Image (cartoon, rainbow, N blue to C red; front, side, top):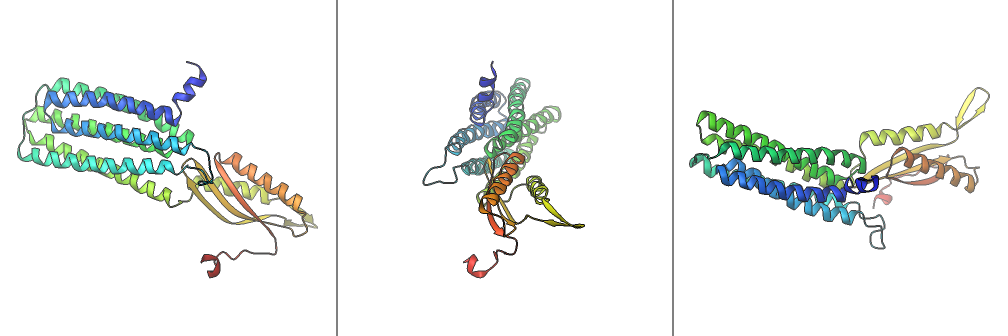
Length: 315
C-alpha cells in the first residue's frame, strides 16, 4: 500500500467508511451472540452497535459537508457541520441507553436462563476487539485532522467496548452464580454509562455551535507568538520602548478551523505599507504556530483605544 492510499484511508472520510463496515460486522456478530444466548445484556450490546452504524453514516455525511469550500451563502465555510454529527451521535446514544434500560427492566422481573454462553461471549469479545482497534486509530486521526466528528465516533466506539466488557463480566457472573437477574442489572449499569457519554457529546456539540473559545493550550500558543512579536523595540538611552502591542484577543473554533480576532497597535508615524507588512508577518507566524488558524487583525495607532464595551457597539 503506497503513502497516498494510506493517507486516503486515514482521512476522516476514509475512517468513517471503515466505521460503517466495522459496525455492520459487529451488528452481525452481536446479534448472533444474543440469538444464541438469549441474554438481554448482549441484546443491549447489539442495539448500541446499531446506533454506531447510524452515527457513522451521519458522520460521513457531515464530514463531506464540512469539507465543502466556502461559497456565497457560507463565506466562512461549512466547518461547523461536524458539530451536528457529534450532537446527533450523542442523541442516538441517549436513545439507545433508554431502550436498553427499558428492555432490562422487564427482564429483572422475568429472568430467563442463558444458553451457549461460551460461544456468545467469544463473538462479543471478537466484535469488541474490532471496535477497540478502530477507535485507537480514529483518536489519533482526530487529533491530526482536528475532526470533532472522528473524535465523537471514536468515543462512541470506546463506549461500545466498555459496554461489551460489562456484558461479558455480567454473563460470566450469571453462569458462575446462577443469579439470572444479574444479566439485567449489568445491562442497566451499561446503559447508565453510555447515557453519560451521550450527554458529553451533546454538550460538546452545543458549545461548538455557540462559538466556544479555543482550547487553553491553543490560546497559550497564540499569546506566545504575539508576545514574541511585540518585543520589537528601539533603544532610547537605557530604555526600551515597545513599538507594537496586541489586545482585545478573541478566539473561537468551528470544526477543524480556529479563528482569532485582535487589535494591533503600532506607532502613528508608520506608513500603511510598513504596517501591512508587519501584519502579514503576524498572520503567518500565528498560522504556522496553530495549523488551521485564521487571523483577523485590526490596525490601530498606539494612542487609540477601541471601546468594545460601549453600549452603542453592543447593540
